[in-house]
Length: 272
Length: 290
Image (cartoon, rainbow over all chains, first blue to last red; front, side, top):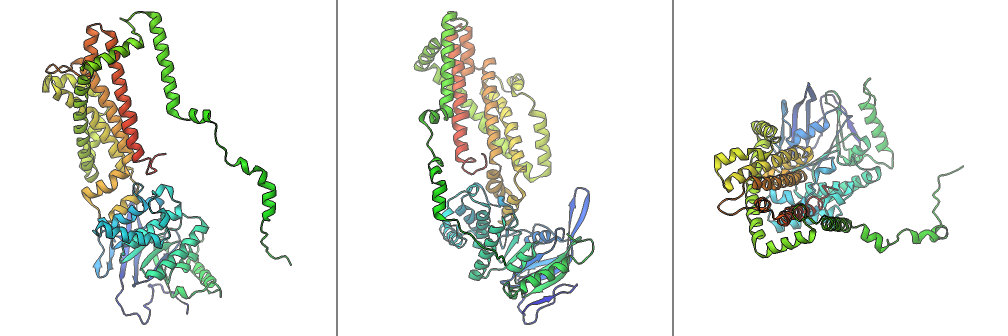
């Protein structure tokens, strides 16, 4: 059943899961510099992601959720705390953590859809061309782009570009797929369709994904676990587990959405 | 109580109201309009008109020492091609040009790779381009003649200067303009150093690199012809610029015009044919330029 666990210290461990986490983020504090400011993006954040989790980082703008994802991706070093994946400490970007970005220009314009998906397979996983092509084609089929396989990215729509990026990430079969608001720049209809397709893909392959969003509805639809962050600086506010049990038909999803909304915007001065 | 309802458009009604306009959705353009739409046709026509004006005016002037007719010029051009003078001169010029262009581009590549990977490299490139880009390469020719003597190496030295800074400046600007997302994608694949530059930065910055190569070519071509006018004969083998200068001294003005025409045609061929073909197969195909 639906369980919304809210605790200021972080998500409470869920009973019955003893396997070591795939990804563990421990007391991570992240800071970055602008020309005249030193900004603390997140402070003392901890969470675990397990195999086949659809883990959502949710919070209003300024809560450091994208920065946190970049740190997991290895693009930023925490000033305090540690990030481990499969027991190895994260120090730099690598193909075991494939990123899917929000921006449409993440595809290489000089490569066709097929070449875009094949490129990391040959460069990072060192697969022979034939093997890489077969793998790439099978994932392009999965995201329903079979017909566009030889097209260049500039001829594709925004939704199709994001599908290519997802196929590229998944074809690498990374330990974890990192998605940074991948559907935020899409129109509402396409976004809903992409959410459905992402869930379908997850049913097929049960990949592990961390998904950053600022839409509560999207978080509830996509995830099985949510980490709620509060802004300025980003701190863990609550963890929500068994989100996949929320149901649109019986209204429990709507109720959860309201509950999360009230939780996120309860503090005075943070109403948006 | 009113309930929301979906009213489907009646198929008959659609056919009835818009059927009459269906033919107007797509219509073929007339043949004249189609031909006039081709840029090459319009430009060819312009050239023909200018050629006619040249021929008529020169015939009216009737002074081959000042302004030979187009037909005289073309006859001389054909003669000099047939007797092998012009092909040999073109060969000499292009030979030196390609050498200077290749060395300049190579140095530019080296400098920009250094600049993108190290901060001191960036500073070096920025300082050098700031100093040498405004300096016309031809102004180094007197110095080059002292250092390298009357030979091809002086010309190559001047050419390298005319190519290097333009190409390096544009390539570096192109590298800096590569989107953050693409760079992060490259890092995500574990690409670093040389592989990162060649697999991500160079293709992503290709529009700027191509612009640099074009500007570099234009600079080199103009500089070389100018340099050959000043001196251009080394071991009895002059280039196109020397051909023009030599014939002016002999007062063979149709040959001077023929030389100028050759310079124009070669410039046009390279700038429009070579670079446009390259552009069509790269950045236009990739949608990086409208």
